[in-house]
Length: 185
Figure 1 (cartoon, rainbow, N blue to C red):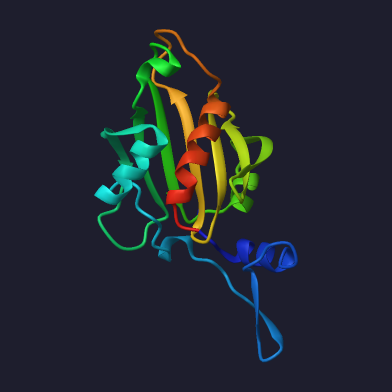
Figure 2: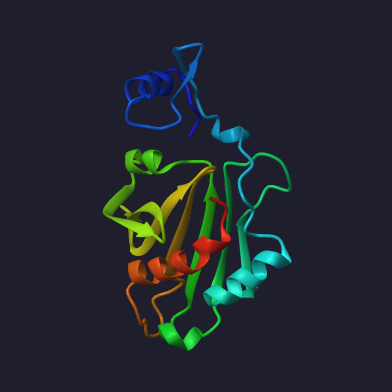
């Protein structure tokens, strides 16, 4: 999603509701537009330091699958997924947990056409939303605030084969709570 003239108008219109849309310079409000393509987001796909965080959250770093990971510099998305350490805990179906690190915000998620917001949540001390995709209701996203934009944790099964134990939103919430302390504010 690129910010254009229409977004600037929206930013001005909601400046009282959205922190970060305005700033004060010499006593006058100035519109500050976030350029999501210029923010360097946290990279969950690399680094042995984060591998320990994954293990402590119950995810297996050896099962990492990179969805998108720009080699360096600004990126509006960095996304990886992992399998749980105890794969039997969630049945014989293949559960994956995906972590989305993005410069997009909860405000943008609320406006996303294909997102179905099913509730509000807190991930430890951060505000968040629970949602699924209009065309994929079998998965669940727990999204929460970050200075860079937000983090999203998704839980879903890779196939319809095998038994499934647990509800995707509860699983996503569990892993979001476990990963959040290891993610930038």
